[in-house]
Length: 210
Image 1 (cartoon, rainbow, N blue to C red):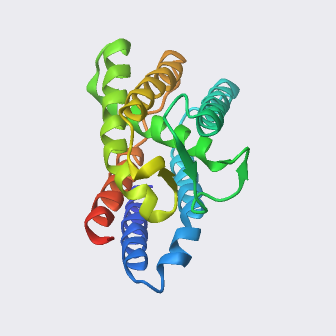
Image 2: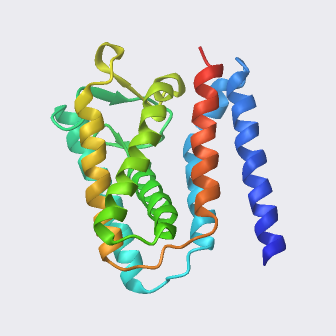
């Protein structure tokens, strides 16, 4: 299993490097932007492969987090009351109510990855929830700057409002609390790899794409 795990780690490192190269080439950028949902689905499937707790309760909690994330984004993008005034581009795939269906999966994956990472700190649930939200806020600080360049979403007047970061932090707190207090085992050895790959992926593109 360790040999297979190593191969999967190498695969995702190469996968994200190829993504960086593809998005950096003017002719390849449109194609690789369209592959964004595929990359998210592939990463989620790989993480699910190494998930240990397959009881019905776990999948019901995952479904709850997915729909909480999706519904919050639907309300947010259609009212501007939660995150501010923004709209989704074509980079996130199929939409419902002007909101990509995959955005719920994005929230689920990010919360799962962050909770898995903070679970190794061996701290009490309230502190783990806060640390998870702080970790995801740091991730969002990078993501918000590169998202418009990848046609994921864009902000009114090109400015990210402060309320977005507050809303992101509070939503991350709420979703992390659901996952942590459900006591589902999310210690997943692939989680840190995917979270690091995604963070570096967006951070590197931030310096490459103009």
